[in-house]
Picture (cartoon, rainbow, N blue to C red):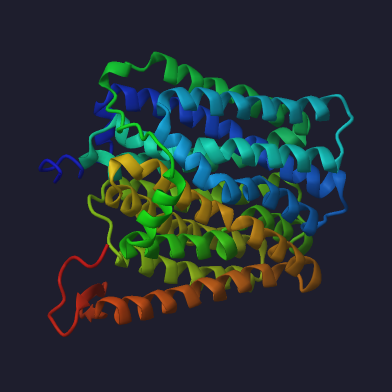
Amino acid sequence: MRAAPGEVGRTFASFSIPNYTYYFIGSLVSNLGLWMGRTAQDWMVLTQLTQHSSSALGYVTALQFLPIAVLAPTMGAVADRWPKHNLLYLSQGLLALDAAALWLLDATGVIQLWHVLALAFLQGVFSSLDNPVRQAFVPEMVPMRLVPNAIGLNSAQFNGARLLGPGLGGLLIAGVGVSACLLINALSFAAVIVSLAVMDRRRLTPAPVRRGGGAVREGIRYVRRRPDILVPMVIVFMLGTFGMNFQITNALMATKVFGKGAGEYGLLGSIMAVGTLAAALLAARRAHPRLRTLLIPLAGFAVFTAVLGVAPSYQVYALTLVPVGLCALTVMTSANATVQMASDPDVRGRVMALYMAIFLGGTPIGAPIIGWIGDAWGPRWTLLIGSAATALTVIGVLLFVTLHDGMRMAVRSGWPPKVAVVHGSGPPSGGGAG
């Protein structure tokens, strides 16, 4: 279905849907708590439970995402088998209990590293259900023509919380300690649960419920037959595995390279979110994501991440995080919208589960590697390796597209130069593959 004239061009078009507005507000509050809690957890591991061990931080990060990779196909089948509105109550409640347990252990003074590792693993288990359900729930709240807009707004609220959360978390850690941030995170899950409760379920458009066996195999076969879905998945895998490890790299650069404290570390996450928030708002205005809106910002990400790796000062590093965030979020929102819109409703839960598994599930591979590189070669190499990996991804995807579909890239003159993906020897079109 094509968008109504002028509708998707409005940045906040999805707010015309009350159910989506409730969900947006609840998610914003919850994500604000999430970023405060994540900042506190990383700082606790790095400075209280270890002697600035990047490997330990890498293991915590890996355990948060390992279950997503392993359980994603099964959880995607669950997402297509049961009403997503009900499943969100379950997944959000379990995540709240996990966050509350981490706060309680820290508040009582008995917290140890293995506690954090175990709870990180449980968080990953619960997130393996929550992620595909939340992703596939968006088209049930808004009409399909507004899905790219809703995805962009979701990214905007997530990164708006990311803009404020780490900075507030750093200030709270410096002022009253880690426990306050962990408690706020645990309580913030109530916001999503309340938003689900006040929705008018009659205005939701649930996808057909899938019955019978073989759901997991069916979902995998569906994706394998769709190169238009596989290409965005490969891109986000490489970005998530080797590029998006700023949970580790920012902490290492702030403490080991620039000698900064909790406040400055938290500020880095907020500065980066300036770029990601801008990208999310731009994505909300984009009706039809294209292949070029994946490849051009991915190339930009590789360039600016290399600049991060050689940044001579904290100030230069912090400012460079803005275009890095802009490029990264543009890739992620474009890939998400492309996969969502290309998937049939009855398999969307399984497709989005595989998408999230590939994007987030690469972290258990990348995080320990990046952590080891930080210990063995130094923090700067954690960024330079990520830059090289994403640059190679751009080259690989261009070769695949050229060989598979007979496409090529064309550059139009003028400023700024316009890049288009065209078929064979035909003239450049305004579109591109997507």
